[in-house]
Amino acid sequence: MTEQELRARIQDIPDPCSLATGVPLGIGEMGLIQSVECQEGKVTVRMHITSPMCMMAAYFMREIEQRLQSQEGVASVHVEFDQTLQWTPKDIQPDARERLAAKRITMLGGRLLPRDEARPADS
Image (cartoon, rainbow, N blue to C red; front, side, top):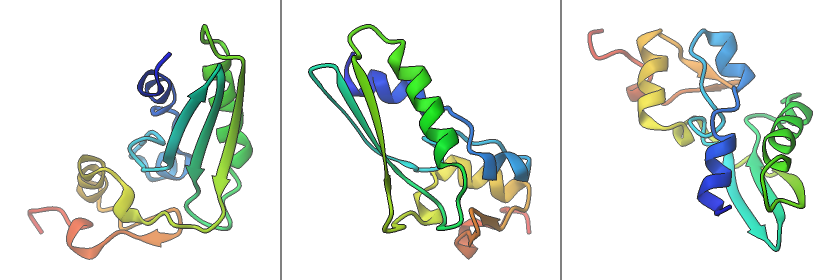
């Protein structure tokens, strides 16, 4: 499998913070997938977390492992988390930010969405 195919298998894993808002987004839309690398059947997925208080790391790890280990040619899966907290709401894909704004969601993952992108166009 290519790295793009592997990424496609995990990008729609639901992000629990977005589920709580009523605007479910996948970890790909959230901008949480930093990289996916595959070398000789060994897959490494590097992810951002939204907050130092994020308690979903084990959930993300389990979901990623389950989705990728069943793929032909994948011998092992390792998930690493970026502890530097480089993720910001600006990493959310623009169309996903629009869906959040349409529901008047102004905060996600404990962080405010950028003001100009957190307001519906009609307000």
